[in-house]
Length: 309
Image (cartoon, rainbow, N blue to C red):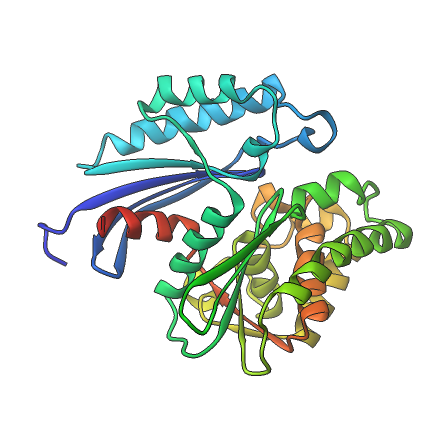
């Protein structure tokens, strides 16, 4: 790729992790220079208290300082900082905004679920060769976004407050979770997904695309990987039976056992069961027999938007 192709950067700060992408953008092609993730658990306790904890803010600011140093190594045309689910729900958002702006020089944009869904949709499809009707599901820490296209090519999206961190904090207390805890989480998820099934135009030929860490981790386990390999995971297709089996296996493991899995990111060890449940119940409730996995996501959507502004 020519050196004249501009470089853009995007930071996504969600409930569980803060992620950085520095990439060259040439029309609809994103070429990574650097992709990083830090598990900061910004949304720890938010579901119960409605505010960020001081310790969670400091973990997030520490990651921002690391990212500031990395950004200085590149000639960035524009940086955009996106804040998602946890930042919508809190009473002390100003402390978060001020800290980020002081460190990185940009103000976080707290985007709504509809915008998050649109960016995730755009990012997910940028790395896949898919035609026809699609439904994209972005499973986060605090919320899950669903987005599809209507016959007139307009986007329709829905954001629901189910995610790996929120489900774990709300229901999955034990190690491993008890049957009663799993049933409670499953019922909670199904109540939210029922809305999607009623409002979205899902056809028999619709392709279901899943993205973000919960989905890619389930894929890594289903593929039998000994270490995380984004190239093998991207574009893989998992059957309902594979998702079901992996979800059961993860929920039956202790945190110590999950931590020993070579592909498991340390920041997902305690919440992956909740994320896998969201994926499984989404497929069950919406009638999908397989999920196509994308390693491209909201970050790719953000830099594409910057590069094509």
